Image 1: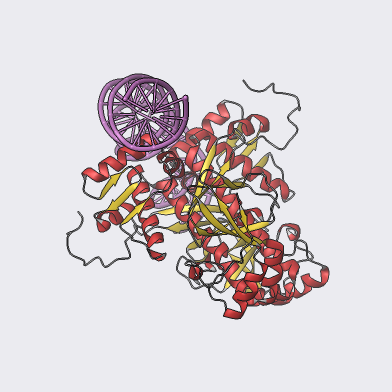
Image 2: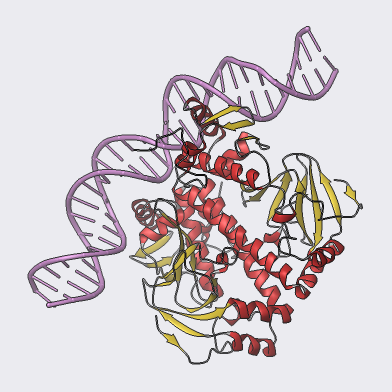
Length: 250
Length: 250
DNA sequence: AATCCTTTTTGACCTGAATCAAGCGGCTTG
DNA sequence: CAAGCCGCTTGATTCAGGTCAAAAAGGATT
């Protein structure tokens, strides 16, 4: 978990639009860079922070990906989120002054370290930053509600379809392909996140392929029928539904 | 949904310690009261705000209780939270400027209306308020993670036990009995919240009673074996486990 | 390229909770 | 006070997804 002292520069960061600097003036971004301690590299499988660690920093993902998970009293864990570049990790630790969850890198990843005390101070002086912090908190709450809906009411196939659509659209926002990507997490993590077993997830991947919705080889996924997959996921997909190639629905 | 212009006074509010004023000096509480528009009474079954309503206010619950729920594209709803006095409703609406969920009173309830724009302004000047807002956001994220664990990994009986323990401890913090209370929501809402059916919930109430964990008559619940119920819930209960009356476990 | 180890896939079987279907209070309303 | 309704309970049956077991496919290490 190397710590690199090379200065953090938001200006050349590919996820600048999605991260804390969103909505800030160049001048305010400079101030934000000034409170950002450093970059940090986390290798696959290493933890950025553990459950119970004392809270002092937030982390902004520059590249790579993480899973976050909570650990129950009986040792059982629940994966709560898969985090991509531009997202902020650690917000749930604020109130307890200690991390209730842990964050583990799914691949070699790079993060910006944000000392929260200094960030808080800066936000006090920069309303736009304040607002961006609220927005990030609020978005995270909204996302969790979506997942609650999945886990509470949806069948296994709908859950997986929804997750694939979710990942797809998040990659798209980051300028990557929305139809072809590599899942950085193992089946067990996907299963845990979706409240299923690895066997069920594996069977579903096979079934989706047989049905022509996706092509999948290990962690390499290509969505071949985005509309169909979106219908299965229940989220009316944001792409134009008048698009050819499928006549939908009952 | 009457709006009462009588001045809001945090000083005499029973949930002052749990609400926005927590940690604020008397002077800062005065400022908070000044930005609070009014009280509002919401009758059982009425909505404080609907999904899609534009966002301008947060609501602090003075008395009563609410459920919040999200609505999927197919019209299906998922209850996401049962809110008690002292809690803040509407935070998830910040980023989208529109409420992604709705809040419905489970009984006649009273709330303080907090225009967010003014609250935000005040928080900019009062660091303690700022921090309290962060804390409330952060706590809510933590809570959601607990529910994810329930829905993702736990059996039906564990889910209901966990919910009863949760309600119990939240009543306790508000100075009410932790062992005897009236559930303000119908079985269908409990079932929906826990990702179960009303039938299953009903059967579990019956079973818990047969096993001597609770006594239940309709919505009136008495926990007769708090330790046993806590064990079932998996959350090592915060009460002294050396307490007599039960020799535990396998 | 042989070994070990982890991840993934596939198959056979089982079970917990959903679904379907009645009946039962308690509460409102005429 | 009867009628109707809604929320709750209880029973019988079904099925989606879990569990157990084993094989196959990579990937890393020597």
